[in-house]
Image (cartoon, rainbow over all chains, first blue to last red):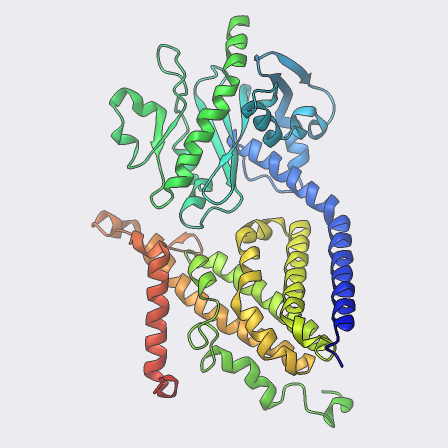
Length: 249
Length: 217
């Protein structure tokens, strides 16, 4: 009696409606909490790249507002679209700008806008550039912090959606991130070199290039290549802005 | 136990406790039933994800076992697998959403593994083989037991893989620097999936060597 087509159809329909109602109400109810967590995580990543870490989740919004002095949005020609100094930093345009959309516009040859954070830590100005790229299983992202010469790296921060633990996921470890400190993204002549993630180690590069290279992760080749491409691709998009900034100095 | 449960079968009767203890050894989901091998290979490079995965599987398996057991008399035979899948998928998404809202750090650890729970054969296997034909309380215990048996093997594999592959346990360095200075090297093969499979094989070998009953004639 439980096997008539009518019963099966009714059963399936009711089951699906209950499951859908349950899931969508859970998603709606929990969304504000989740978004807050994500914003806090984003702030943590920005501060971490600048070498400021160990801030608890509760203090994060306050510290972020203390350290960040300015949020800038630039366009594809390196022109400043918006400078945001006053008001809570988490509601600035730069903070809510979706990188995915902007890089998609870039790949389509459309106009795009990019965010940039200017921090002040112990009297030093630090420029922070958010990055987005692809790893082996999904997106990878992070931030790179530059000194006010716009060349020397202060620090980096990486995160990922689902790289393999112990292999690709090692890009988030201090051991990998520390390698970037002090590296340079321009050579002596002022040409853009990015920072190369070298399989087999930065030692394999010629002597004068070693300042532009770090060691890749063994077993995480595709993720390492992803990091390499992400650095190149993102930093390249900021070159026009760097040029403008240097001209004005 | 209160008086009302006395006349029925006690909650923790010997028969019920067997549901929890049997999967730990004689009826282990990984080494005897050979279910859930894929995730056992994927998440055991480090101890921490292995443990987080085991706990999540336990929550999802126990909860879906109870739900399916409650529904067991109404589920149409012909679409029972689909019903089971919907229950599992709903549970997994709910767990994921709650973790994301309240314990964000752990949810980040879980990221990939949440998807893996849905595809974990142990869940479908237990729902089909046990929850469809038993009352909610035994089904709950069966879920806990099987998740424990699964977690036990995961932790054993992750222990050896992290120790020999990375020289750490829970990300703390346990092999002293002096060993490395003397020329000791981490075995890079241990962090790759093939060695996880070999470790599972060794565990099965040891277990069958001790329990002769498990050897197929």
